[in-house]
Length: 296
Image (cartoon, rainbow, N blue to C red; front, side):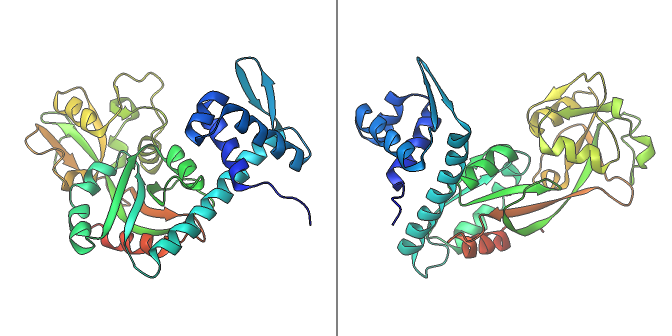
């Protein structure tokens, strides 16, 4: 039988990549640096190819190493799923569930849905991680998260998912602004140069522009990192912005000199989903959580 790498050797490789040095990786692994180095050399011997280019003060992955890191993350995630499934057994929504949520959803979903979720499932220990979609999907694939809440349309291959609901994209304008009227806003009235946007790379920014049929302005003026900052900028009269309906329901504009209008039919909307790894032992829990968090 062909000798195979051990889980420990694969873990050493991932830790080295995450920590960036043999010394720090050995500390996290709880072994000596020579032991970690020896384990990696044995991994290379078993694979029949080097995984690292060893340079003074620098660590570079070879093409084999890059492939090994990706596969090691997938393998260790599946092993962790196995251990988690054994611990949980047939108990639904029990124990720790690590859930990643994008920033334009997290504060509004947490303010309402999670209270009911904890009431219904007191044995569930949800640990929330807020980050942008690319980082969340990477952590999900690596087994660092059990599920992710993201918004579609978004390219997210390799996950199973269940819908939480559709979230309409609306327009907020300061009181007195020409767009701060009543009723649905005709799409032709909204100009890219009037918009203040979230920073480049935020999926809500890209989705709102695409669904509204607009391109980002060439010379952007005001850019914000969060919806809370964006709506405060709007209330200060700096311009107009896109805002998700779930944020309005959560009270984002209450007490502010802001008027919110829907966009004329067909109204743009994003789909909020909860995704998980195919074959995950927490797939059943993820579906129940998605159901409990359904948008009203």
